[in-house]
Length: 120
Image 1 (cartoon, rainbow, N blue to C red):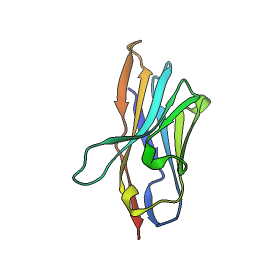
Image 2: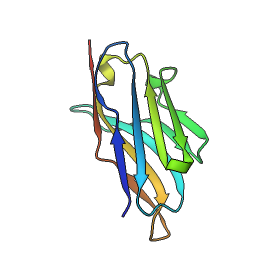
Image 3: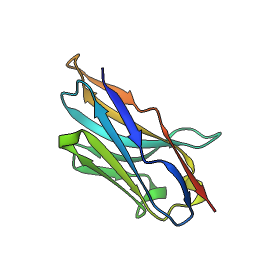
């Protein structure tokens, strides 16, 4: 059983920083991509940043220059460093991974979500 376990969310003032972590646990036999999505109340879930092959990154325009995604292959973990946060960044942040589990197939997995609240 594969699980994505997120941590690092919380309440921060505008202009502050937070670092999210997401660790894939269980029977993981290879990771294709890991990414962070977010969903604000009343809005659709949207991509924030992605990491492919452990090295290639992509970012949504609204976080470029403020957020950085990185990974630790040995720990099957992805991080999202979020700087210069503003009220519009308030959302539940979800970790997503495409990885090979015990079925020997690449499958999609989602974390349970972690709340990020930015006070203005």
